[in-house]
Length: 387
Image 1 (cartoon, rainbow, N blue to C red):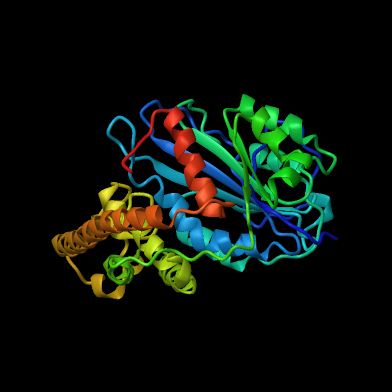
Image 2 (tube, helix red, strand yellow; image 1 turned 30 degrees about the vertical axis):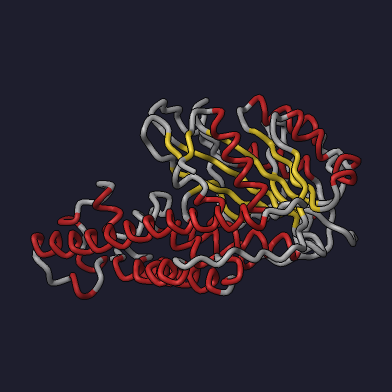
């Protein structure tokens, strides 16, 4: 049972895996994505230590998820903004199966930010054994990593016990990650010297990543900005422009509202503001259940959607009435998103000036470590950031 702890993500390569018991609640897709040179994609796997005393790490991840995603809002390559896919693992929790080496795939690589938020807020800590090599290995094997060299692919593994624990060679796992084009960034929750002694630096050095240290128990208090309330309110208004379709439309709408509520519980860390900014970006994509996104992305023919799969107020509409209804919602959403984006830029400028006045040295929080690192590494594959 561990009594001291540290922080977040990691990645692993194509080793021959031992047989794991059925633990993960979601199916994994092992079919690799075909490389597409024109594709602007970012893939990030977050590996969180959920053993005892890591509540602070989980709290930081919950409140700052949106900030990490938003770090790519201003990114451009060849004039295009990338879309971000995120995967989440927990490891080191004794409530998980020992046959699975105390590892669970929480959310596979994807773009469902509402579901990712829901899963993050449901994580609980419990004493256990932290096997970094094994969870990196699982991430490399399970996840649908893009094959293109143009895709920024990174693992962030956070924890506080020695990096080399467990039967899987963590150093070899990092070598395998590098061979697969996946950068491994190690985040030690604790002191720098302790992290060095625990070999956290070795993993990052091998996989061309970054060794970071954070204070997982530091409470995140964002700098209040004049734009915060209006941005948060507009984020709630956005929900009114969503038009659910399909058998899971009600469930999806409820999940969206629940993610807003969860973010609202982290007001001190500005999570509602960061979430609203995410919802105004292309990375908040709900084409699977929302007609506005689906029609815009041409993944559905509005005229062919069965009436029973539409909201009640649309079921008696003629094709032209359906089109007009969705077009109006599209215009309303675009206007709200534009306003949020403008306010977000003003907010960034305000916070940058305030932070310059208050700048202090010390250990970073999870979001600070991840945002700084992702920007630096994504620049290596051609991304340029607006601020």
